[in-house]
Structures are given as C-alpha cells and as structure tokens.
Amino acid sequence: MSKKMAVSLGLAVSLLAGCSAAPKAETQETTAVKVMFYSEDGFYYQYGMLFSAIHPEIEIEVVSTNGIEPKNGETYNDAMVKFIKEKKPDVLMLNGPQYKQLAGEGYLFDLEARAAKDKFDVEGIAPGILDYIKGLSDGKLQGLAPEFYSRAVFYNKDLFQKYGVPLPEDRMSWESLLQLAARFPTDGESSERIYGLKPDYMTDLTSLTRQIGGSLDLSYFNGSGKKMTANSDSWKQTVEMADKAMKAGYLYVSNPNEQNFTTYEDYLLQDPFISGKTAMAIDGSYLVSQIKEAQTALKDKAVKNWGLVTVPVDPKNPNSSSLTSVDQILAINAQSPNIEAAWKFITYVNGDEFARVKSKAGPGSFMARTKFVSDEEGRNLQAFYTLSPKEDAVYRDYEKIPNEMFTQLTNLISTELSATEKGKQTAAEALDLIQNKGQLILDGKGEKPVESSDEAGSGLMISPRS
Image (cartoon, rainbow, N blue to C red):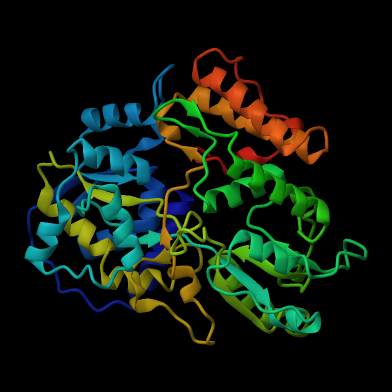
C-alpha cells in the first residue's frame, strides 16, 4: 500500500467513526465495478476508502486515465472515447466538455428516471450545479458531481473604513471592482505598502486578461470551427483594462520565487490578505481556513474584520461565473453490465452521508449538497454558492483541436501579451498578431511548437489542459 493510500485509510477510519453504524454484512456475492479515474491512489483518497468501508460487497477496479495519449492530429476526447470502448469502465469520471460530448453521442445512462424511481434526493444539491450539468446534456440528468470549486472576493473591512472606500458588493463587474481597488494608495515600499486587490493566480498580463475575459465569455478562438476570434473590440477593451491595472500599481502581483519562510508564522503571513497588505483578494476555501488558523496562531498580526462577496461577473449574465467550476462529473456507461452497483456508487458519493463526512475533511472543494454549509461566524459563505458554473470560453472547444496545435496557440497568446505588458506593442497590435498568426496555426500552416520561455510569460500555468 502506498503512503498516500495509508494516509487516506487513516482519514477514512477516523471519519467513519462519526458515521452511523452500518449493519453487519451477511455473506453475499461480490460485484466488480470498473471506475474510470486519474489513478488508483487518487480514487481511494477521494471516494474509494469511504465507499468500500460502507459497501464491502462491491469490489472496485480503477482504470487509470493517465495512460490516455492522443496521437498526432488526434484530440484528447478522441483518445478518451477509444479508451472507454477498450476498457469498458462502468463509472466514468468526466469534465464538462467530455460529459457534453458523451451525452450527445448516447454513451451515458439516464440518471433522472432512476433517481425518481428510487426517490434519490436531488433537491438537496445546489441548483446551479444541477442546472449546469443538465445544460450540458440537453436538459437530461446523466451525471452528478459530488463537489465543485469556487472563488469569492475577500475584503478587509478595516482597510476599507480607514481609506473611506465603499465596500464591494455581490455581482460587481470587473470594471467596478478595479475602480474600487484603484482607490487605495499605491505609494510606499513594496514590503510595507497596501494593495487594492490580489487577483486569483495573477502573475502577469496573460493571466489577468484570461480572468477578465473568462468572466465575459470572450474566446481567443473557436476550436470547433477552427477560427480565431481574438481581434474583437471586447478583447481590445479587456486587454487595455488589464494592462492599465497592471501598470497603475494597485494590484498585488505574486512572485513564487519570493516565497521564503522558515516558521509557520512566516508561512501564514506570506499571504498578503492575511497580513493586511491587500484590501481585497480573489481566492477559495483554502484562504478561509488559513485566516482561521492565523487568527489563532498570530492573534493581532492577522486580518480580523473581513467579509465575502461573489467574484466579478458579466453584467449581461450576472448569475454565473467561470470561476465556479465542476471538474469531475460522475456518470454511468450506458453499456455497463453492472448498472445496479454503479448506481449504488453514484448515489452514495452524491448523498447526504458522504457530504456530511467529507465536509469535515478540510478545505479545497465545496460539497454540492448545501445541507452541510457551515457559517458559524456569520460570514457570507453563500458567495461561494451563489453563482452557477459556466464553461471557460477563453479557449473555446480547445478539446476539439490537436494537442500540439493548442500548445502553439497558448504560447503565441502569452508571447504577444507579454510584449504588450513590457510596452513593446499596444493591446490592439498584440491581438492582431494573435489573430493572424493563430489562424495560420489553426489552418495547419503555423510554426512548430516551441518550448515555453520567460518571454512567453507564465499564463500557461492555468491552461485548461494543465
């Protein structure tokens, strides 16, 4: 047994101690179920330990997707379909585009009718998650997601009061959020001064542009039609807004090379929101947990009065966000000979008991079942649940183009935006180059992929294929 699985088993045992006692299992025939997942260790850590302890009559065989390798000119989804036909897993782990494709091609079992028959409670699942999944499968429920990821805007109430800035609100636009951030001072030494905003994963113009463009449903290209869509007025306004914000000095730009700490206190204080250096920060549940730890360990050194609002949205579509995401949709192979056992697995990991136990297991994702949302200190944790997921359109239908072509496009985008960030060209010039060179790539006439470099920036770190 690997060290990770041993740790997982320990976690499962400790958590199961709080579960209601299961009846003693009588001798019965074991059913084998194949589950498609990243890896065996990953599956047992996330789902398998708890499920196997409750259902020893079902034997899980994990078929790992790590071996899926698209051939030249082949998309990842093409290779995945071949993998499913060859390995014949009963339970499928899919992302949004994969689920949409397989649902459209008739590969998935209808869960809605079965849920109604067995009176499985779907009402307790966050409505936005169900709406998102159904929207991908033509209104049908052919998959369920136990967990999802989300971001919110954290804000330091004391800093807003000190500088006389009105508090942020739910569903602000990026323009309004940046205007708020710009009202904080930009003078002083970088180690001592205050910053208006720390965007999520923000290290350069490429990543900030992607965050803003993602909220506005902008796309650099359309993978289905193999057409570039980068030189629009909307993209120009977005890049100019992001570039202006970068150069104005009120954004906190993280630098992984400067993360030096020798004590646990240093580790906690390296986060600029915890240490009171940023008035706002876009982050997830980990920051909630770290703030609580810091308030206990550091007392007066950690941020005290803080609140939460939703991340910025598109004013034309204010109820959804690409920063709310479902990474794993669990579905049943319509050709499975083990529908009953597969359904038992799906219902358990999407049920109340699993959500109750997993909600105690630490930060990271959020459980799709809202019954166990804890709001003990009166924080607006609904900021994480309010917005429905939506697909990040920045690289629209990226899964429908070959991997090497996608790499060329993302390198091109990072290189040209990096040149704009350094003042070598305007936003309009960068987008024209991205449009024209990108179309050559999509037409199969582009240069061969190059290794990413400093010139290309670090925006590739958050590509959808990373």
